[in-house]
Length: 83
Image (cartoon, rainbow, N blue to C red; front, side, top):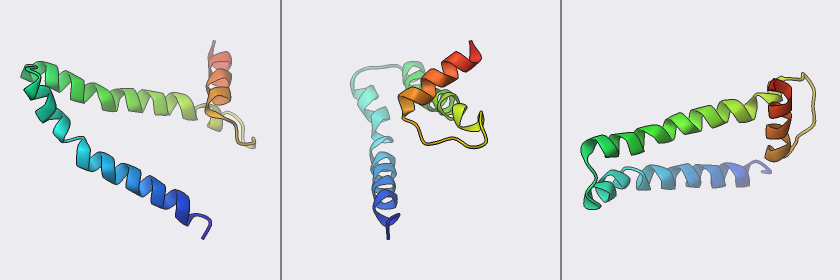
């Protein structure tokens, strides 16, 4: 039962995004963007998400056993580790 609340919030968050995001293309068209500009705007979002996910999860695999940290601490440790 403890996992029901986070699962429900996560499911509703992604379901709402799945309903809203396809209409961004129509919104960009109404603003007068060209097809190339719309393609770049909609295509760069998954790229940024992929890169940020890889960056934020890298510290989690750095040590076999570590306590949960905030996202800021994880990012800082990643930056210090790879500099």
